[in-house]
Image 1 (tube, rainbow, N blue to C red):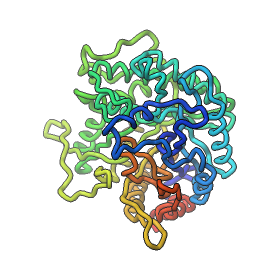
Image 2: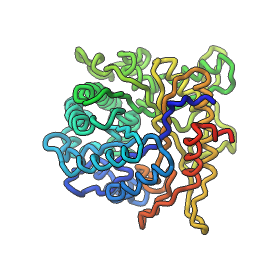
Image 3: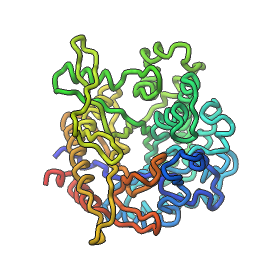
Image 4: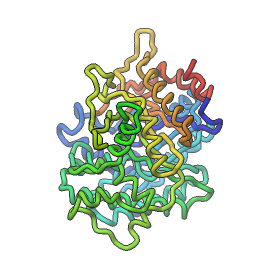
Length: 452
């Protein structure tokens, strides 16, 4: 069995997606609170105002996590809940909520892994330019220092930003996520540079404030590429495609990874973007490349790639009838193997899978249970590929299933269900799905149940 004894089995969720209490106890508004009021922005006008009401039901949720046997829970802090204006005077009630949550997790034997930013940017700071303002790195540093000072006596594992590719591209280029902007590529590149500066400042702030030895990482999205065959040519073409720049957007993996882990923007992307590249000041790259301890990555779908005669990559369409999720993402278990492998080979950091999961059309059956065999099969296939990566020498330290509970899926509202726990949004009732019991067995056997 490949999973090491120290392997950490967890699940994840994010503040805006589950907490609700969007305007309670002094919380400030976020860009998502604003975006959800935009007509047509979110499916059926859904909002995160109530969500799963985790803010009030966290004790029940932690008890469910304990019942599953989670060893770790990846949560995010709501920046405007603890700093209503984004900077300045902290909100004592917001900080107290996370105090209670973290203490409850520890009492249940669950290690809290804290993400500082999972998209709920303070609206007050968006009015001051948001990520387009270089001061955003300083704002984030102030926030990171506050959170680390308050919670680092109990929290050892940190992530700065979740999926910057998504909130920059979908939120600032495509306009389909908050804040809903459609900017020119030059401005999007500028915002990307500032968000990477914020990551570096965040790492510095956590290390300076931490009250115990800590481990810090980063949780970018991935856009996996898997080879059509196991030939050396196809594998190298898939690797090349995974890190290749995109001419019209910033979904490019290397743009978000190379500066953090190598201290340089990728030369091919820098050339491609030409006059639109951000202005670099002295010390910027050194700041972005602050030492981190692990390579976090979110892994879901993927593209199939083959090598052309000259070695260049070509995307191969999936066959007609290829399995897809309820979100209509292709199911590609090999994405787990090749993403972990490619990222470790390039950046030489231990891997933490910070998200992986599937949206299914789940409901409570007449027997009162939620039967989700598709989720079990999906997760078994992906975890088997993760095990293969470990067998082949990739140091994988942890796996966080997305998500612990059904939740607000951004512009898709409550249409998508990713949870191990079913949430009846009308009543708040939680019902563990079959996958929760299955995952509990995987955790209990440290992965052996994958082959049972």
